[in-house]
Amino acid sequence: MHPMTEAIHAYTLLAAVTAPLVGAVLVMLTGSRPNLREACSFAAAAFTFGTIASLAPAVLTGKRFVLHLFTLLPGVSLTLRADSFSMVFALVASFLWIVTVLYTIGYMRGLGEHAQTRFSACFALALFGAIGCAFADNLFTLYLFYEIVSITTYPLVAHHQDREGYEGGRKYLVYLTGTAKGLVLPAIILTYVMCGTLDFSDNIRTGIFPSDTSRLMVTITYACLILGFAKNGVMPFHNWLPGAMVAPTPVSALLHAVAVVKVGVFSTTRVMLYLFGVDTMSALHLGVPTAWFVSFTILAASLVALSKDNLKARLAYSTVSQLSYIILGVALLTPAGIEGGIIHIVNHAFAKITLFFCAGAIYVASRKKDISEMKGLGRAMPLTFGAFAVASLSMIGVPPAAGFITKWYLLAGALDANQVGIVVVLLVSTILNAAYFAPVVYHAYFSVPSGGDVDPSVREASPALLIPLIFTAFLSLAAGIFPEFFIQLIKGVFA
Image (cartoon, rainbow, N blue to C red):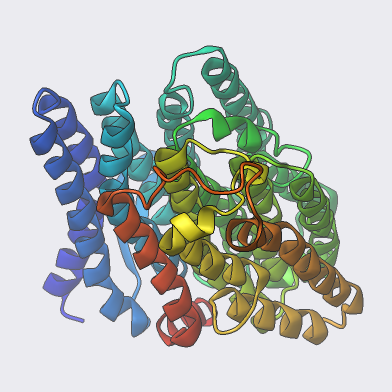
């Protein structure tokens, strides 16, 4: 590629990262004019996605773009990099930001929510942090943007400014910043001492740790990073996620599908593959124990989800469970397992954002939050619950929905690793997925309300809420029927 073209792509990368930050500033400047404010949010989201998408063709051919901004110490710099792995997360997050902006307009206006300017600005800042994490070229840059996501999403979690909001926000901040400072920061120092650099490796096999490094110290560093990136929802540092459900539904969608938890699993898998590498993890026997460790989260969180009547709470514990599929796949250290884990970043995003969009539409239309109160609502809101059913099929792993692709690759990866026990975990978790999603759809369509009929005033939510959830449900199906683009992108990870 011509040097001038390389430079253009590198600065396109910078534009993609800074566009949400500029968008946040514009939102604050236009706060007194709601239509203009929302136009700025949409424009920032569209521009961010457009710039990221413009890099995709070159990345698909195996190109990697790096932009060095400044150096703090030898081996410690603020540097951005676009490669196959980062593009998977960046494309999904930036695209779903566009959809979420449209949904948020209908939701916030429909409920007459306060502080909409602050809400939209913090939303954009959270995406600034998420896109920065996606394109981080080293552990220092990743940590910096990871903390930006934590700080900027606190006002979103505490948005209602009531006792529950502040309590949920406090738990959110304590868990995420506490684990980052108490575990990730020491791991960064240990890594620098052992390696003399924080730069990620150029391939997933070698990692950056010298062969003569203390096995114990590498293992301790690994454990600190797996637990320290607590946005990944791995137990026992998962309680912030259900607690954050006091936030408005668009925030839940942001937390569970677009940015926050995906930052957690992306950061976790990024360091597993590009800091430690497949060879180091295999030599230290870190892969399979990690897979079994997160298997507990997969099963335990599914059992808790079964006990929740509140729809958002059930979806929250579903997220805790589903995120660990991503880590489990990568931890298997087989090509199929790694592909299955990474593709679930995409498949989970499309399905989970649909489920939360549906939960928000149900609340706006009926003011119902509990599943037991939703009997018969499917007859009054057939499109909303139809979209919910499609997304549920993806979460369960039923073809042709996208989640089937995840389960197929994960099962293949487990068999390739000779881990029959992990196969059993995946099958049991699929049964549990069906057990906590099927009753929601069944009650909506086939149960009769206690009063004998659904309130005649209940009908589908406004088009501003309905269109995004139908669209993302369609994407969840399309990603299962036509997975080639992301599969091809993911195969670049092995190049």
